[in-house]
Amino acid sequence: MKTLGLAFVLSMVVGVWGPGARAEQRNKCGCYKDEGAGTCYCDKKAKCGCPGECEPKGCEAQRERELQKQIDAETKKAEEAGHHKRSADTNGDNGSAHEREAPAPTRAASHKMSAAQSKQLGKLIDLYLADHPDARSRPIAEVRDDLSR
Image (tube, rainbow, N blue to C red; front, side, top):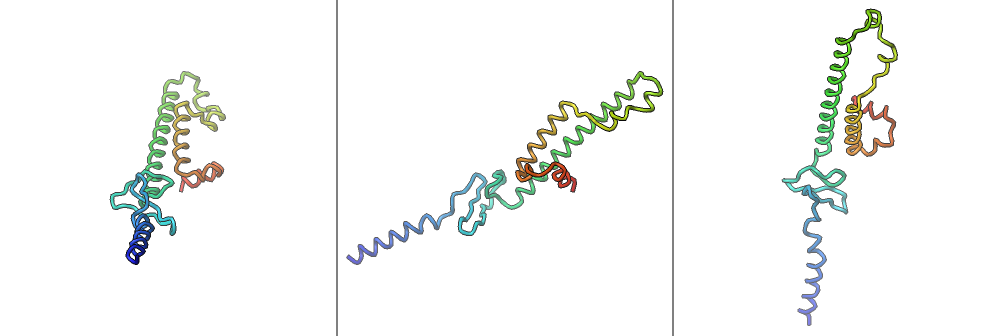
């Protein structure tokens, strides 16, 4: 009878501690979170790709660098497109000398974006907000200041 009771207790211990002793369910990045301490643990071969979940250190910084590179590339494209448009406007201008010397002040003060530039800006904003959901509630001037730093 004692051996039966001992076997029961032993099976209960293995049944209770067995699943807890093995690692938690890993996400697709190869990481899991210890619910008790809230600490993230990752395998040595863990990879980025789980925003908002447990992932290896440095993934958020890597995403920010990639986003900044995309923003820089799109900005450069937009500037080049604007530069080519302005140079084409000044080279093909058939107006009088007075019109060429003094452009209309409203045109210089307000630059209209092309449809392609507007679309690119929308994509960049969506990418930024996907990585920074807290920025949705902040004024655009604050977000712009953060980006310029």
